[in-house]
Length: 74
Image (tube, rainbow, N blue to C red; front, top):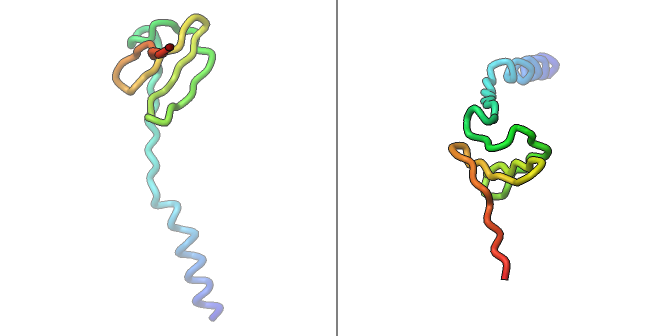
């Protein structure tokens, strides 16, 4: 029983060493289309888009382009 427990603990200890997590990093700036470099706040919307709030405006970023979100007011 002790030997089985030792083998199982060894296997479960070594499993995370084989996991490969990839992290993608992208610098968002005016050089790649962001209208204003002074981002004050970032939030992810339920749609997956990023909402970037600057000193003057808020922009949404879908991974490809920036746009000003529209507010439909009555």
